Length: 202
Image (cartoon, rainbow, N blue to C red; front, side, top):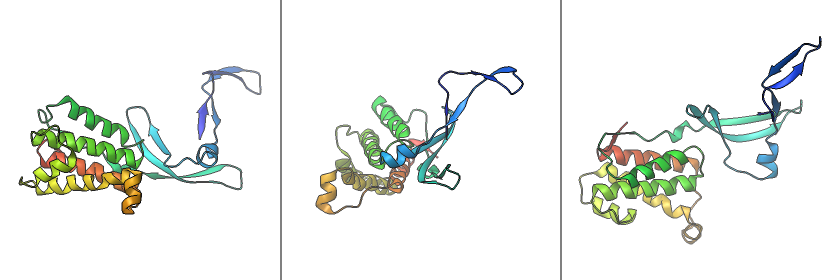
């Protein structure tokens, strides 16, 4: 890992005395971030601001040379939401909810991603069933009367994951903690709901 110098470019002089200016980067240890501060779910975004891939740091060790060996795992499994069909989404609140999910996909905790998927699924189903004030649990019950079995199953998964976000519910029902895989599944289920309701396409 490297970090940029305070001022760029920096003035350098080679062994023969010739001067040059160059962007300069220095070795940067992330051991303190991961080990000393006990950080979990630390991600790397590799690329530029608009085009990047997302990775999670899963291990860090110091090797014989004193350098840090960092093991990373791709989180491409989070995927992205399907492409919206023009005219399918008519509410700004739904567009905002979906944008929030996309923003959280690569940087937020599994709990936050599941929470945002629940919000977005509620907004989407609220528009589809013309019941914008109902919560996801109520909307799922109304969706049972519609011929949208795949959308219903996907929405139920998001609904059933949501109690695991709440510490008291986890203790009360002895629920396991949410994982990245659960968050990835929630995103996929949200995408499936959108596609099955004719609002998006993969």
